[in-house]
Length: 320
Image (cartoon, rainbow, N blue to C red; front, side):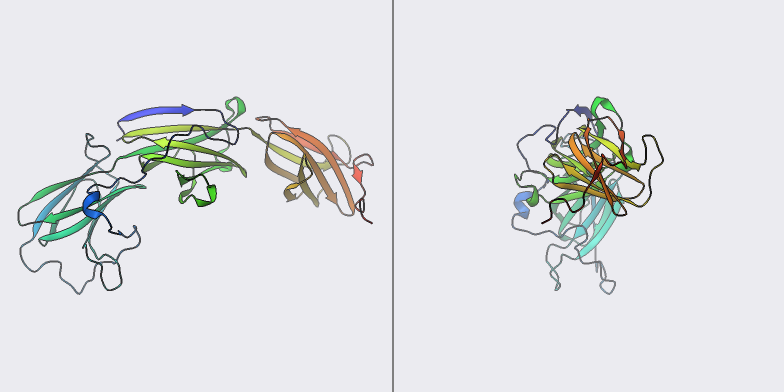
């Protein structure tokens, strides 16, 4: 369905793949006619009432089609059409008159004014139409494209899909806390349909985030691959190098500056860490052990902490 295709790959370290000026993320056909009108969301409409007949006389026929771009082909599947009366009901919601799924759809409605909304994944457009006694056709241009996301480790090492997820936020805000979440927990290599514009993407690999600003072009599939400069590290407490892991061990990872970062419990503690220097602290019963280690991007590793006097620390160290 998408008319164009291109692939993006830019290595980054906790930053954007590329940043472009934000643009409108929601296409609106007939925006002038709808100025000042608040259309309910997909799940915020009044369902049809069964006690009111749809028509009491001659019906008008309206055929609705939608395209990704103004010169694109009609979308043949995946659309959801909703037809609303333009005046809010007693509950403050626009009454839903009719709906359909698929591609091009035809409705028979009483003559009058309506609002039609077409959604295609997370892309959508709204238009005011007038139905008369003569059959007519109305088109909506969604101004939409697709986004497909993936991530790798340094050197192109694949990341297990089970440890990778994406969240898509609205773009255009310098403050991450002010960005509206559009879609959470998007699996890698999933095509997401969105209105054209710039979106803020968060790639989460085992708890390590990389943020990117990516632009979606109308009528095109944008593929973006993020590089995580991190690695999967597994810890175990042993009595001697290469020995069996000791059970009932609690773990704490400290940053180079000594700040607590992650915690875990078990004979084996596995976690994803960004490249850098860390200290791992293992506690078993009343004994505490520690070891400094370094994470190299893309280099998954096992870190053993030997339960020896050299690695032991006094739990009362620093106390008065």
